[in-house]
Structures are given as structure tokens and as C-alpha cells.
Image (cartoon, rainbow, N blue to C red; front, side, top):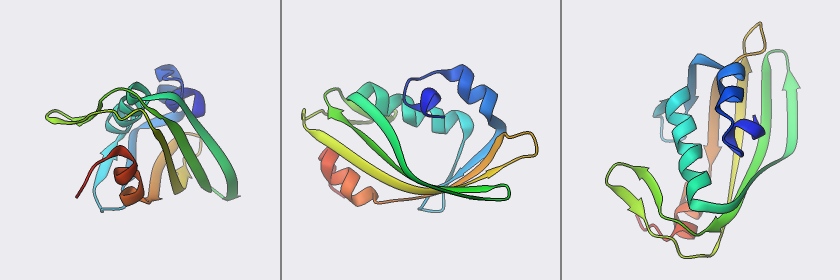
Length: 129
């Protein structure tokens, strides 16, 4: 997955992630596979030296839990959606998530339940809520 999200290899995403994939977000909203991929593309665009690292993985049955960190330097505008753009400040950004993933019988990713510290991320991006 890192090759898909970190490096933008869409073929990896199409191969490993079900077309019916659902990302269950902390705010109780959800995203499709394509919406999730667009979010990662926006991060890759905005953050120079964008990296994804995973320092803890636990698996049981068809479920995997992982603690993941994303890092980069905020050097280009971050476009969340049409009309929502945040100007770069050149500084570092460090973002952590803990996610639980559910896989199908053929190894395809079906669901992700993500928990993240969005307030810390927003403050690093200079976004006030």
C-alpha cells in the first residue's frame, strides 16, 4: 500500500483495494477508494519528501491494525477540495493514524476504520477551526 499512497502508484491501489472499499473516518463520515486516493494525492502534492511509515502492525483473522505516520515538508498549497486550499508555510508536518483494516477472501482491502489526531495535523498546516 505504501507504494500506492506514498508514491502514487495507482495500479497498486486498483490491485489491492476493492472497488467497494470504504474508509470510515473519525468524524463518522466515509470515503470511497477514489476519494481516499485523491486525499493521498493532495498530500503528495503539498508535502515534499512525503513518506509513510508503519511502526506497529497486529493481525488476527481478516483484520489488521496498524499505527502509521506520515511526514513531509509543507511546500505547496494543500487542496482539500474545490474551494478549500491552504497555503504552504515550508515547515514540517507529522501526522499519525491508527487504523483497523478488514480484508476479503482474496486479500483485497474492504474497509478501513481510521483514528487520527486531526487537530494536531490542522495546527501543523496552519488551519484554525
